[in-house]
Image (cartoon, rainbow, N blue to C red):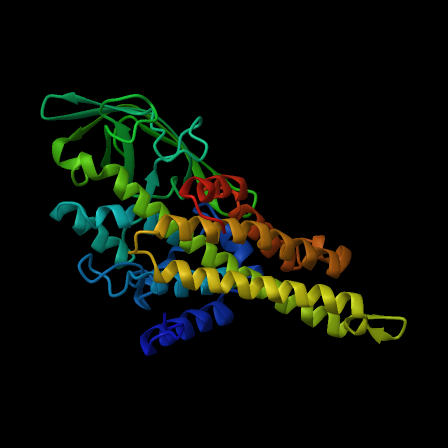
Length: 374
C-alpha cells in the first residue's frame, strides 16, 4: 500500500489545515458552538466553497473524492480545530442518498454546495450499538408509507433540512432484513425534534415520528439494500471520527510538548525530567499506531475485511486515545481543567469519540466475532 498522499490530497490537507489554523481558534469555536445552530452557517458555506464537503463524496454523487483517504484527510484537519460544522451528519446521510433516485441525488448536490443540511436518524433509545435494531415502523398507506417511532442522539438532527430515517417494514426488532430508509423533510407534519448540546460541544437531537406520511418515492434505494447501506455509512463514519480523533490527538501532543518546554520547576523546564520524557514517548508511539491504523482502514474500505479493519481501528483509537487524552491533562496539571485552555476540550472530544459507532468493548467483541486478533 502506498502511504503517500496524492498531490490533490496534499493540497486538500494544506487548504483545510490553513483554514482551521487561521480562522478557527478555540475562542471562535466556543462562540459558534454556543450559537442557536451550534455552528456557523457562514463558515459552512465557506468550507463548501473550498470543496471540503465535495471531497467526502464520489464524482458519481456530485463530489470529487469519496475515497477513504479523502475522508481521512478532511476529518483529521477538522479534528485539529474541534470543528463543529455538521460534516459528520452530512457524510452519514449523504453516503446513503448517493444511491437514491434523481430527486434524492439533487438533495445531495445541495449538501455539497452548502445549501442543504442532512442528518441520519437511525439510532434509537434501546438500540445501543446494534446496527440492525430498528423499532420505528413504516406501514404501507395508500401510495406511500406512514412512519412512527423515536430516534435518539441524532447528530446535528435539530438543524437538518432533511432526515434520512430508518424504519422497519417487517420482521423482529433486530432483524437485518425488513429495514427501509426514507428521505423525510425535517419540517414534515409529525416530525418533532428536540435539540441539545452534547458534553463535548456538538449538537444532537431526540426525534419523534408521529404518523409521518411519505410518498413511495421517499424510499432511498431498494429495501433489500438498506442494511448494507447502513453498514457502509457507519464504516465511513467510524473512519471519519477516528481520523478526527487523530487530529485532536496531534494537538494534545503538540500542546503538551510545548508546555513541557516552557513550564519550569526547580529552575528547569519540566520537559527535562526523564519520567515525563518517557510518558511523552509513549504518547507519540501510540499516536503513530493510530495513524497507521487510519491509513490501513482508509485503504481497505472496498475489501472483504473492511469491517475487521474498521473495528481494529476504532478499538485502538478508544484505548490509545483515552491514554493520550488523560496523559495530556495530567502533565499539564490544573490549567488543563480550565475552560479557557484548549487541551481539555481536545481531550473531552477524544474520549467522547470512543462512544460513537461502538466503544472499545463493542469493537473488541466484533474483532472476536470476525475470528481474528487486533
